[in-house]
Image 1 (cartoon, rainbow, N blue to C red):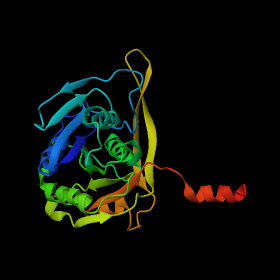
Image 2: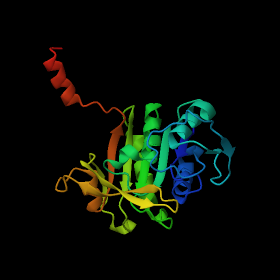
Image 3: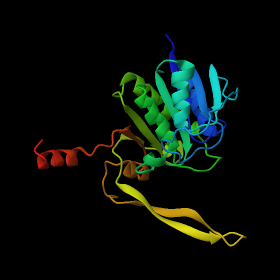
Length: 255
């Protein structure tokens, strides 16, 4: 029986990253592409509840099912699984994103939120990102690595509720040293808002900032792997419970 693979992203259905991923997916089974009709980067796990969703059939990817959705990446996964497929796919693929989704970026990422939604729906899911923001980024050179990761997910099923956050360093493929399963680095953005004045004298702001890794010497993190020429894979889940603090609070209240 053929596998059913759902492919989505946050850069839009016509971006080169998702086209690259959908063509690879075809060799593993029947493919549904359902992705935003426009870029939706930084949407996190947003869903559309205060307006309608619109769907348009497309043929850019030439897959069994293909739809452009007016909503967010998470909307796409929800609609793809619950409305069109009406069943759990064998795999959800999200990406390939233009730019890193390592460390804290996973919280803000539409790419990874789509993968997390797939995991919440009970489907094995993988989010792919390339640490290169250029529209001219060459994805094809990484095909052997992407195939290896997909095939590993088939041969070594991930736990329910878990997805893989895959980040590929911005290096020529022959300079990539391999693949490492690692943890999320403790890092975040030190942010500031650049205030400017429009022609009407009103203030407006651009969000800017610098990314800071607070444990650069740790060799078991995604940031270290990427800086040292490895593809990083972080097993990721939606459960944000601080279990250590939970146990402390239980002791405090004698539970």
